[in-house]
Image (tube, rainbow, N blue to C red; front, side, top):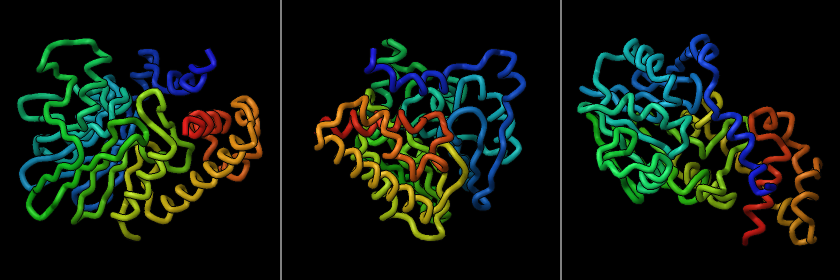
Length: 291
């Protein structure tokens, strides 16, 4: 039973709201990051919208019940059809609306492992099930729309084993999916191939790509930038060092989980999300003790 404790906050956070609450709270707010790129915030992961020359591109789509609100908001931004919908990973708060957006006009794109894991979850044999991505890739994928280059690239064993970031080169906007939880502790899904090492390495890869003017769309949280991401990496590396030290001392999972001092420097800023301090300590211990 202890092994499942780390999943409890995720299960609670990702559980569908009662219908009455959904109807009242299905609102979407928009952040304009450039003349062509927008971040949509509602229930679930942050959505990215890029308006190209003749078509639009969408990154993630939140829960199933958010689709109508998202479509209404997108229609207020552009009348161009959504040609491609990218899934940054397989969790339901980012892919729940796949079947609602999938159409003859819209093609879903994701890493190979996203299709595999979604197929395992829904246990279907239909090759053309609308929930499943129709185009998958193993490492990198480039798309071109006028002067814009859209770089989609895989980061290994970070939040999951199927994470992808989407970078708009000319507009200089990076969507990181759940490889980045701005100003809150991250959820690293160890049961789906995620790892502390991979999570940190994903950030380092992003930092090599961006500059001081890059705008970042995190999986959860407000729009961010390189300076904030650099500070986030330092926090993660510091926690990693502390937990490894405890592991080498022979400390048990329970001892590390209950040691508030390990995260005390960061709890005030990062501990208010659905991943609480004791959960991030447990995550780090479980991941790093495998080495």
